[in-house]
Image (cartoon, rainbow, N blue to C red; front, top):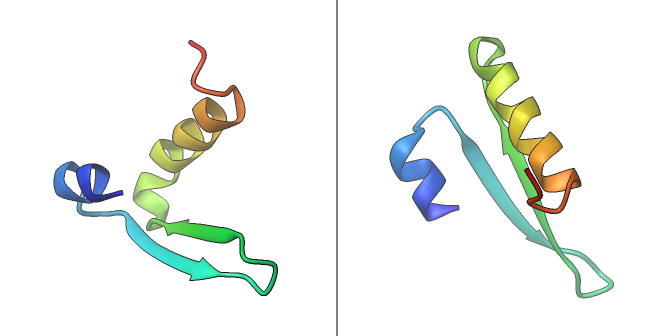
Length: 50
């Protein structure tokens, strides 16, 4: 999160702790950078596999 925020200041990160003890991470960008966020989400869903 720190590394991404350092290079890509258009990301806004919010970390939360759920009642179940799981940590949540919300990432928000403006419309101009939506494709970047979508690519990050796709890579995450693939488990980091290229």
